[in-house]
Length: 316
Length: 147
Image 1 (tube, rainbow over the protein chains, first blue to last red):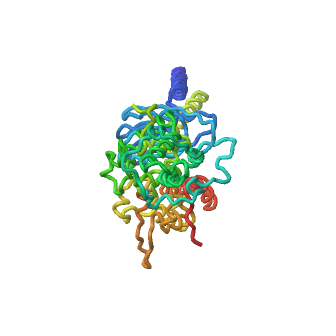
Image 2 (cartoon, chains in turn yellow, orange):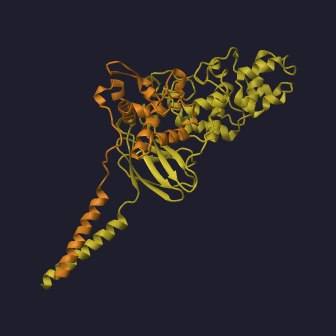
Image 3 (spheres, rainbow over the protein chains, first blue to last red):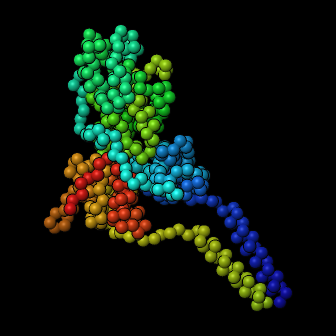
């Protein structure tokens, strides 16, 4: 009888210790598995969180090194090495739908390795009315070819442009011009302006390069270059020539940012649309789900350096 | 004696229950049908899993996919809904010709996946329409839905 009671007590104590121990030391957070998109991508690929509440995640990579980042935030990417558990805790201060994505090139379908975090809070989750994107507001068709009718012969030099003894009409220095007009349109309009009509064609291109470079800052160019290296280079190539390492596996041609005919006929608004919406069936993802507006414009500033170079203050 | 035996039994049951809950994962059925993958073109069968699922969903649920627009810009090429991104045409005998557009498009597949998730959450087609519009109208114009 007594022995029976002792045994029961022992089992009870052991169970209590086991349950409390499990509760205390059991790994916290949602387990998220990372694998190439061909074999599943993120699992789960939809997460939910509360504003102001920690979202604890435990990542494991099944096949190779992956990376985790959350679009629309300034949080640094986190590597997920295979064979390890990588713990990440996020706290969102704004409700909304956030896209998380892989930051390590893992396959030709790497760009499809995305998921969403639905963050709910007191504020309204989705805006009642959504503004159309800039290219729609400007009535731009971003899918039709936009070749420049006139291009430069020699690559323009913004430094030379600053030494020209002309007064540029102020509307050409406005941000709206940089956003809404293609360089070739500005060149054509300057050709007709009394202040600049005496310039040679090459000098006029130098002036356009000066105008374009004036819209960028060392900070936006540095940010744009980093974004380009991290997200665009595998297709568009290190020099912007559309010759990235995975191009041979793609079925569509990748635009050459160094080609004046292709670029000088494009406005920044057109580039903005292509970046945020993506390539409509071409394999170019919609970066609008990941980049902030500030990041998108920084990337556009950097893309123009393939035509007009970098200001001397940021050139290596 | 009876008291201790009862206590031990309760503790054992609690332990089993707790152990069981920490290790389980939800399998769960879906609120929609999925078309069979072997009938799909080889390009779809070789696509990433999320893409395969989007094709399977669109084919099996045309009335839902046709009620949800796409915002990737494909309206300009004649698409009328998210369904058009996956299925180009249906012959009189019911056989389908597939549109490979979605194989290279992120937005089309994401919209189909969101539709699937929202159906599982019990949302109506009208609610899904509003949700999708709120998420994707910032990328492009909606396809003009038929009917």
